[in-house]
Length: 101
Image 1 (tube, rainbow, N blue to C red):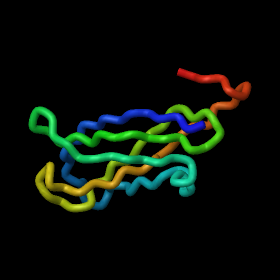
Image 2: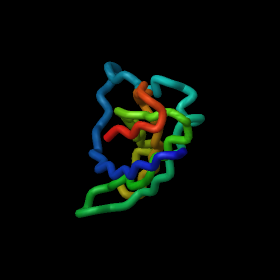
Image 3: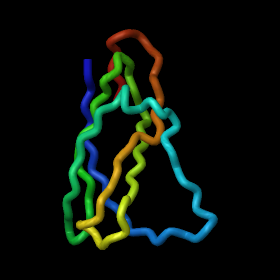
């Protein structure tokens, strides 16, 4: 059974620090087999916002989902392009069918 979670992220424009910036990658490179993400760019109160849904396509209960939202082109928002990926998540062990908040 798939579980759907809505997401709304307000993006902050951050200038990259020179050489000391660490590139973040998802903890589990197979996250796309577990989650389906649909999202779109919007603007609220003059700030860029990512809105969408995350669907857990696995048979497991998942919690503590963290997302990466990467700017792909350095342009002024909202014309900027973004990429949304699952950075990390926890698989919650417990009795089958038990729902967690």
